[in-house]
Amino acid sequence: MKRIRDYQQKRGMNWRTDVTDWVGGYPYECATVQEIFDFVRQTFPDFLLEGLKSTRGLGTNWFLFRRAITASPAAPGGQAPGPPGS
Image (cartoon, rainbow, N blue to C red; front, side, top):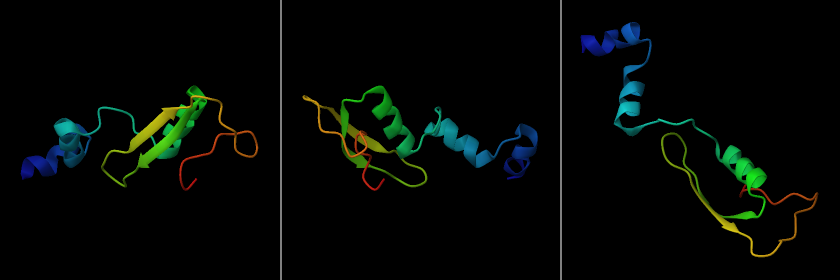
């Protein structure tokens, strides 16, 4: 227990966060649901959001995009519709 208590002082990081990362946590940069949606809309304007399962806290957000076969009508203002609840 002393090793865990002294861990942050020696490493400069939280022991629990490091363990989460080592066991399979975050070897990537996190992005919000809105950031992912905005990236896909900008990079792939013909992709439509078909499904979204989002989590709070630790977890994985799931996105299902479909490439439009034909040009779909844009939402008012000339922009594609946003994710549910936006």
